[in-house]
Amino acid sequence: HEVTVFDPRPKAGGLNEYGIASYKSTNDFAAKEVAWLLQIGGIRMETGKALGRDVALADLQKAHDAVFLGMGLPGVNALRAPGEDAAHVRNAVDFIAELRQQPDKAKLAIGRDVVVIGGGMTAVDAAVQSKLLGAENVTIVYRRGQEKMSASGHEQEHATSTGVRIICNAAPVAVTGGEVEFAYTEDGPTGLTLSRETFRLKADQVFKAIGQTLAGAPDGLTLEGGKIAVTADGATSVKGIWAGGDCATGGEDLTVTAVKQGRDAAEAIHAALMG
Image (cartoon, rainbow, N blue to C red):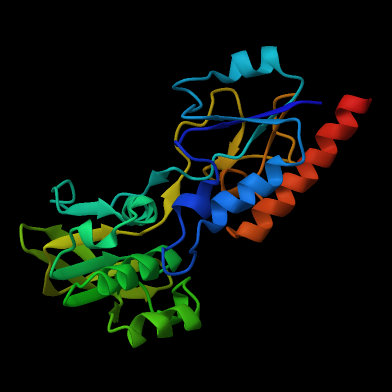
């Protein structure tokens, strides 16, 4: 069998190439891994080809015996706060991707006062990278308690040891030119409520790291909880199409889970094609 991999970006490697902070993954680790995998033979890479923009699912189905979707979660959740469309407010994932592809980090502009909104690994990565690039004040603000942050205790400790401040139980309510206004939150049985008490943080750069969403899922596939519904072996609701990784249901949002889902789907595809 020949396998064709379509990738929307200029380089293959996905999250490993574009989504991991520069200080964690050095020496072209992702590119070397892709080169090693391609030595298997029978795999053709087509970069710069996005599903829905350059290739249609119906055409892929006609030209191939099986299709596997592994596009992750390319959309970023909105803050739902006035002013979030300002030029100095960016998606943390875009900032990390830009960093990974910039050979001379000194050429990257960074704010003096950086605020990162979120509580996961991406928030920590964006905050630590900002500090390493020379930002004076870097603050992570998370809407719930510290024990609910999805970034591990080790990651949180790494952030604070580099000089990043972490503020919990606060949510953004407005973004202005040089500040972000936050309201303190209370996490009760009915969910999160905003208190009337607010505070402001100086910010000439704001990074959104409040989770990602499935964007551009092909029509006709059954979705469940905002992801593509799949069986245990990755089969979708449409015959001949499998899916895995963050874009599909099942398992945690971890690289090891995505790898396992890819393997299981590959074995299921092989079994289906061999009859």
